Length: 257
Image (tube, rainbow, N blue to C red; front, side, top):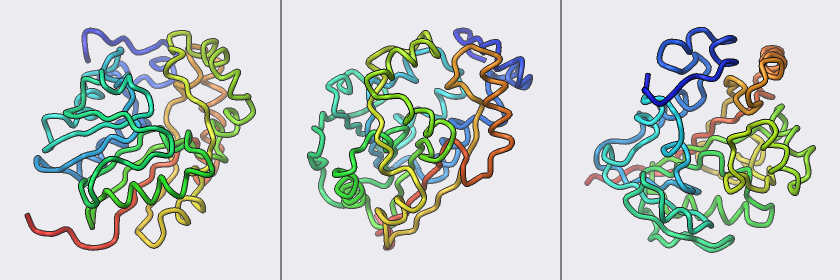
């Protein structure tokens, strides 16, 4: 375990395995980025879509989390885009671009082997969703992958987030997660957050979606909230799991280097 990281008390109380390595058997980051690791090699061109400031690399996480999440140095190139100029300070990127809302990605068709959208799709507006999906597919090579992780519109997190007006997200999250910075809270739209929407937006390409219920870190430091959330997760059908793991493979074959 990293010397900097101490698992929060609710984590080790409800998931005793977190005492060893700082992660649980339900860890969504470990699940998502382990699978991503099977899709890239040392020559892969990767786009981190909505990369932000790389908060996960700047704040307390385990060494395992940082190692899995950091692709820079393990692949050919990592490029990041975001609407916020803070992306220019992201230490995990080889190259960064500020891209305005609704603007096309500034890359040639077929540039990337993999596009990552980690907790980004929930912020896309209804009117922009078809163009966002089409532009991601445009910059992917034939046979390349989109890997996305996002709240399920019909899962517990999605329902709770939509019940809170966007103007109240900052104060509500500050209460649940005292360490959460205002600049890391963004309006939610949930226009690309159901299996039906994803298959429609990314047709006719291969769309693989499955639900995942991680430990309820979203609920801050309250053991009671964690217990309630974990109990709901155990009783929830997989189609209503809080998080959707999305892997879309663009049609066509990769060309030989």
